[in-house]
Length: 293
Ligand code: SAM
View (cartoon, rainbow, N blue to C red):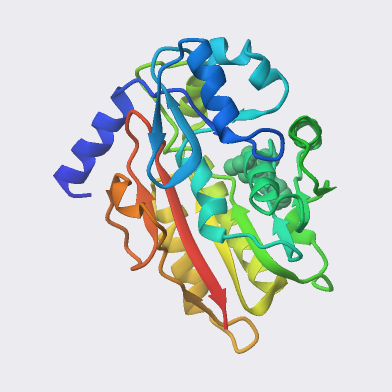
């Protein structure tokens, strides 16, 4: 890795990450949230690429959890990077959408909000305890989705979907913060071994193959991870691009959306994919849009 890139990554890990949230438009209008923030003297910044996203300046996550807004499911605490996959997917009402690795449901509920609960969402999660959390969050946010508790690698090929999000399990290399180092970071750091990375790569590859099987021809899916390692991102996709078979031929659809130029991006090894640099506001994150042809 070139020196400049490595330096920027290390710097990104050292800053304290800001509290950010997404307005759940299934339950509340953005203007109402703004008024409540102002009544509570909560300072905030808005985000160029999403009117639902807010960056808080003078409150902690715990303080936000005490707000009625949070308790009533009107806002969802979510890192800005984690809001990108549904925006890139552009979910549409009436479509059959699969969220393949869904818990705790940040992106499932976002897809439900974007489509105003009018898409047929299937949210798959293998871990039973995490699936319960997913169901709780769906209920709290008023988001509609059918929860499938199973290993997504084993979903029957009989099914097919118009749009798929594969927010794959990963090493979490993009989410580590050395500044406000907490229990979650400690857990990630302890488990951050070559073995974990290798296991993640195997699962990511199998899940991506399954996603392509399940995607209807001509339609698009998003592959994302909260890792910035090429081995879990570009290299997983490259392997599958190389294996392109007549039945499962794919191509990369370049990612573009309004405001993308405002994101702190690292170069990637596949043109059209994006890798977000970890900093004060963003966790490290990778995204690719894939079309089945
Ligand atoms: N998309 C989620 C969100 O935005 O809230 C975060 C997903 S997290 C990165 C990955 C999830 O995939 C974990 O909850 C994990 O338990 C689940 N998972 C791992 N392997 C899986 C598999 N083979 N099938 C289904 N889910 C799986």
